[in-house]
Length: 565
Image (cartoon, rainbow, N blue to C red; front, side):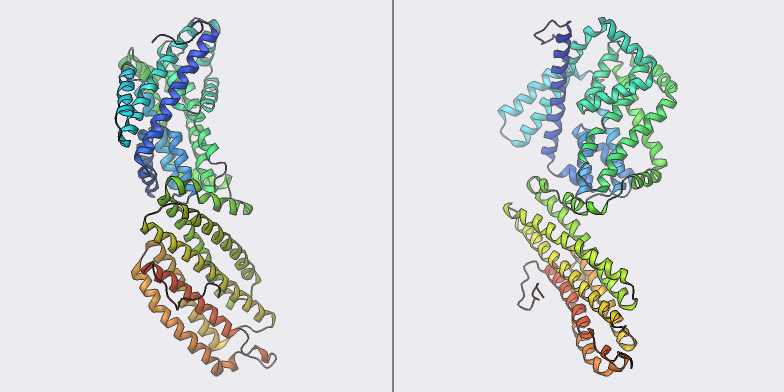
């Protein structure tokens, strides 16, 4: 392909303009392919990654498939970090997907080695027809993919023509000789180059061309290749800067994975070079670009196998290095609720909100459990912990409410509007459960200050009542999570028993009042006992609200309790 530079193609300016122009086309082609593939798939790629199970091998396969489809390991890792931030994925799943993404990224180098560039203009022509002459959106996006594929190889050829004159430059020859002699320098060059252009595909494509033209020895090329793997991690690191703890841990893993693999391969570097020198001589011949492609695949596959053998230690290291600070709670919560999803994928936005609501529900459950413990054990730490959790629950309630209300401007299908309303009601109920837990803690604190611990039959009654209410709260979380109408009906049935026991235990106060007092402190008789019963009964009411909403999202009852109570 002739150079398109306006300068003398052998001059420094000519070389620079041609290489940069080719690089621009190469990056544009990759970006056009990646963005069009993501648009064509809608939310399917995100959903595919989200469904990665706790089986790490499935996670690796998922990462590989997604990266092959969108031709960008960086894009895959950014999606993973977004899903972690939204609460859809845990760290272990993310590690598997990111390892798979590393292997999937090798496909670009393999395609470059297959001489598809001979057909680049044909792909551009077909893509143009799809874009300009077919109105169907899916065909347009497919045209973008095909067009981008062709432009990618045109850019690569342009870079090749620009790099060719470098072979005649003494300084370039000396630099390539130095890289071949110093693997660590080669790794450094590959890292810096890839970090600057943020595309390992582009940097490895340039490397393949330089190697193909005979301007760098295999040892130097493989050293640069190792550095390219490290440099590509910069995208994930940048994407995770404002993300929660697990997202930061995942991006750090991406870096540690490639640094770990590079160190291992540098230790056995001569053997690595000899393996692919033999393969090049026997199989690849003139098409030695495939040597780099297979060396890339080999590096990522072997590193994945090694890391899998000690993955639990990687998790320990990541958790030790990155811990969530207390003052990061609010930022973490806000980042879990990705506001971009509201516009790009309201369905995923609702799923994100649901995941955070479940966290809120579990915090409310923990508060009720702590209140029960505090009833029977005079330890001010329980009271302090309940108040701290109350602040967190209030933050959840406000943040989730604002997030859900932001969706009001989106024209959601009715079933999603029902889900949105159910969530708004549920966060109110969980918040009120936490409020009643604080009330309980304050009642117990007063009794302890007045030296009035709950004893005897009254203690037995309250312990039994607490157990029933705790079951209700736990069931409310489960029925909301799974939209389980069977559990919801069970909550409603138990609520009848909760109401009955509240009246029974309140009336029993007169019978057991002698067990609620001592001769030294007669005012202990009924201090807050009725209030405690009333607050536990209210917690049951809020669980009942959640259950009724799950059964019928349109449920509006005149008997429903006032949220301000």
